[in-house]
Image (cartoon, rainbow, N blue to C red):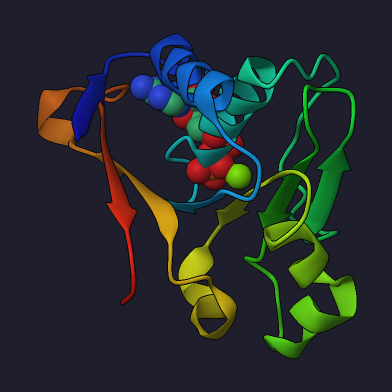
Length: 144
Ligand code: ADP
Ligand code: MG
């Protein structure tokens, strides 16, 4: 499925719709360059889960957990991860296979430990279509 947005609010809205439909145990892999809108999408997603507090990019903490929605949200930003083993230390398995929903920015850096079944979301710019244009491709993948 391909979506196109023209401003941050529209990316937020798409995230919100997907967050509202998200189910326990789902893993969302969010790809795209720095500054493309992954965190904007995640903020919408959190809002769709009923999370009210501020959601920021947890770049320096890898995992940020939000408990005040209809189920827990585990927000990973693995941009600065050194080794995939750090994911073990964080206890990612309790997140991926637990009571909430996981969302991972920069999933390609931790490929080894991603579940076979995940929703992949790729956000891309196309400067020919304007500075605020984003193409958002959503794909459910089973296996690799
Ligand atoms: P990332 O987490 O991918 O590094 P952020 O979500 O932190 O990126 O930042 C995206 C930036 O791009 C924000 O400043 C946002 O306002 C801006 N922006 C402009 N147009 C859009 C759009 N259509 N969708 C999402 N963000 C947009
Ligand atoms: Mg971010």
